[in-house]
Amino acid sequence: MALLSSKWPTRAVSIDSNGASLRAIQSGDDSQVMNLTLVPTLPTRATPLKGTIAIGSNRSYCLEVPNLETTWKFEPIGTPCREDAQVQQWEWVNATYVYNPSTKMCLTREKNNAFSGTKIKVAACTATDGQIWKVDGTALVHPKLPTLVLEMPFGSPSTLQYLANGNDAQMLDLTQVLSAAPTPVPTSQPTLG
Image (cartoon, rainbow, N blue to C red; front, side, top):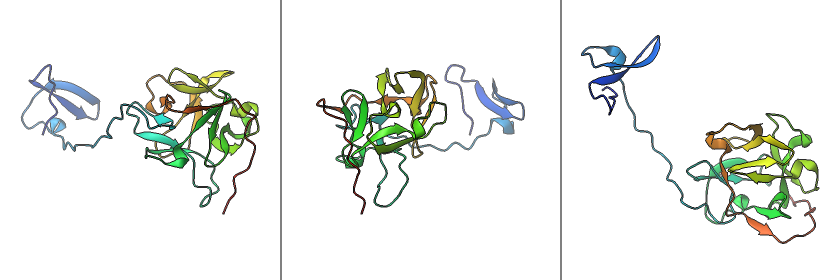
């Protein structure tokens, strides 16, 4: 089977040791024979679920905090969005902090670091600089570090990375995150076990 060009139906993709190119179809040319497998795609969600931070252009993944009863990893990850999943619910507190009510913790830059590769965790809300966030287009950034954005590779821990336009893991939809009434920053620790 060959992969044909819709614009030039007499040409096919040819892959050899020099790379890929579009060449005239040639019978017996092994560089044009491909075993194509249909890769399933996730459905696109028109609107994110209420209270969630949806990830990517298709909005099928959501930012989720780990189950702190079964793990001590405090790193949120991107997982498939689920209706009424408390671990995927977030609130804006004072339009500054991203707060998860089920863990009573805030989204935090590890050790208040500010460089590419910094891990993002959930931690007790302490109103420190490492917990301040703002939405900049479709990115979640720290106001003082606008070139570093939250990156959520699906199923992997989140980190701060340099803004890369078109990077789906940096595209976040926070339109359904509820704003909490201005209150003091939550400080209570979650109870474990």
